[in-house]
Image (tube, rainbow, N blue to C red; front, top):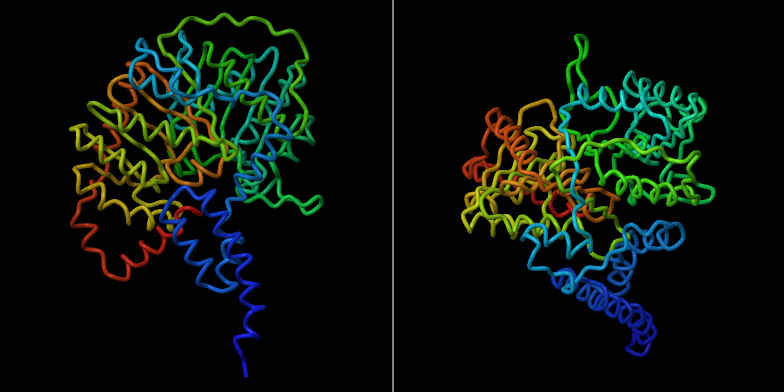
Length: 472
């Protein structure tokens, strides 16, 4: 017969981990709803509650990332001095946001060129690599060993044979999208390649998260290419192969290129533990001054501030006339939902353009669970027909654009290493908004009736998928 006395040791065994769990929740959980749920679980679910919190509730992703940063990060580009002291009455409103978040003002005199799909982007990138004289720095998430990937490999090998310093950084998970290892393929041909946190058993390194999702190509420190475009045949089309993916990439020149080169060098040091040493003295590249002011915002799980998420929420909240969003994956945080609603309530036109059929079906299910909250306030949501649109664009008012690699989902904004580039330029804004107008014209607008007309099983499916959105 079980007596109260015999239960005391079991109770003590539960109380100790439960108290530590509550202590940890109170110190580190920012969301009060999440914190209250974990506290209740730790207190009222003997053994199972504290165990579940230790396994699933502690954000080990961020802790590991900060550990890697302390060990390997040599170039402190991501160090920031944000705060009220940086407020300046001479800085315009949206520009002030990035100043306070990054501690840096945008560099002036840049040129930003829009490159549509692989036909334009790859042609420009390959031409720059073939003309390189000093060094080529390439970072990408996916580099498939297909016709496009081999064209890049040939150009990189030829550049290396000319004496150009060539360094390629591929993500350890992203390279698994290719049937043939791109890092091994390039290394066999004499190209210096590093993998960003590859999966391995000895020594153990199993990091599904902490991915480097940035896409960067810097040539001779004179021109850079950035955006969200991977390197594969998927972004191109020919007579025998229909286009599977549409995308937008960007060519940049001016002072911003040096900032982007520093970000690459930081990532290389992170991945290899070794700095990037130049093979030769850089030769100045003549650059015509442009009218774009640019400010890179690198972000990752080792960042205390969630700089990109905070920037996006703040510029959307500050919109006066319009907000245009194009993204393949849309799982907005509560803060971003509130920012979009706030902009619409002040009279700004808010448009969100999404793929009508997502390549990740569960992401499509999850985002439909939040669309009602947006449509109810007059926010316009459009579904694009195939092919799948991988573009990542944010245009606010008449002169602000945010370009780069980040999607609007927790994986990009909390778990990946991403790169956003703020561009203050009325001309670029007008071109991208014209592109978005074209997308809207060919898309179907989502209506409230379409969402309320979902069957109960479908609504339950979508709601269940949304519950998992922090991990998608």
